[in-house]
Length: 221
Image (cartoon, rainbow, N blue to C red; front, side):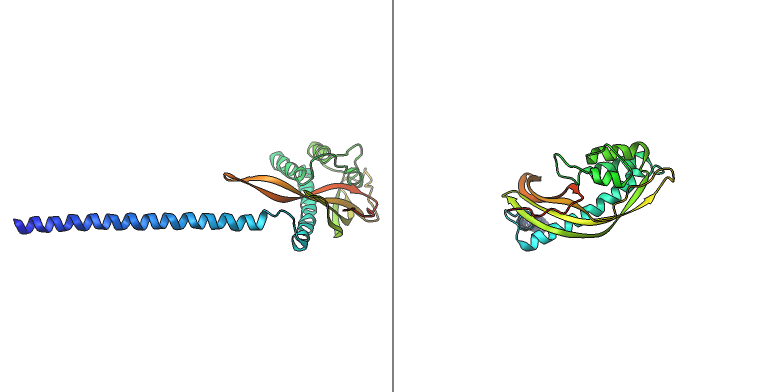
């Protein structure tokens, strides 16, 4: 009987020691996880939270602006396609509007190339697209950075893309007003504060701006 009691005591001690060991390993794993999260946050801050972008980052922002112009043309085509589901078209229209800087954006030249009049803002163009589509489709060609992003102040960089548009009629009764030359669209990199979990970081966001027929002479510092 004493031997059985001794065995039971040893068994209980083994369980208790094992539990302590498990708890210790669990606490260690938790600490390692917290360290990993902190290291990830620090790496994220170094990548996206920059007070003043250097030449390499500005080149990346220029390239991102080119991509956003292509995205806009794609969203515009989807929003204007009356054969698609309306909810899908509305989503494309909303995403297209978000590509542009807040405030007064003049896109009249683009609208005229699409055979539309009396449209000045991206919102107005998308409303017309959703209502009855577009009389013609416009394809971008030869998109390039014409004026690289240049500092305007501590929180705004401005530049310009140039491109050409190739029109294709969707309705024979309406004549598309295509532009034979190149067009120019302003681009911006703007410092903004955005929430990442419980933290707020300063990040640079790239936007499209107004469309012009004439090449801007320069964007002064």
